[in-house]
Amino acid sequence: MNDPVSTAEQQPREEVVARLHPHSRVLFWPSVALVAVCAAGGYFGSWFELEWQNWVVRAAAVLLGVLLWLVPVLVWLGRRYVITTRRIVLRRGLFVRSRQELLHSRGYDLTVRKNAVQSLFRSGDVLVNTGLDRPVVLWDVPGADLVQATLHDLMEADATLVARRRRLDQSTPGQHGAEGGWPPARS
Image (cartoon, rainbow, N blue to C red):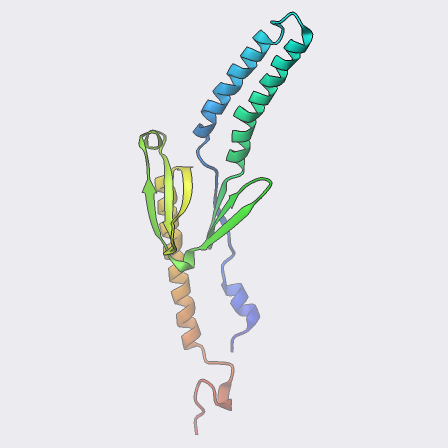
């Protein structure tokens, strides 16, 4: 008989393997822009004789700092990838969030794509082809080759677990017993 408690105990717990953001090098130019805007705002913030003009320069510096630094940082923070023992979870956005999950048991094809800069920093785009129209892309993840190898291992482990469950379900007699289900009643 299949006891619901025993089957729940047989299933391994889902554990987080990795939490990833895109590579942090994408914050280099926004940080350079912030330093330049702060330097220019400090230098030109009291350049003019009329005080309202100085306030306009300071306000423009704050606005440029928000647009050139804060917005890219928030976009970077809003893109997260979580790899667990059962699935990949892709989350995008801070205010308007979208979440996408890919189960390892469904199986998929993995490809790593790198440009010259990504190769230099050992990062890359991991394309997860699920058989749908477009592949799901984990953009610019650090250690892209390690992520690909880990996902391959997780898919293989999950496929082994699913095959073991199927064999166990086929070898375990049904709950119907002698009432006409499996196994057939003996006379």
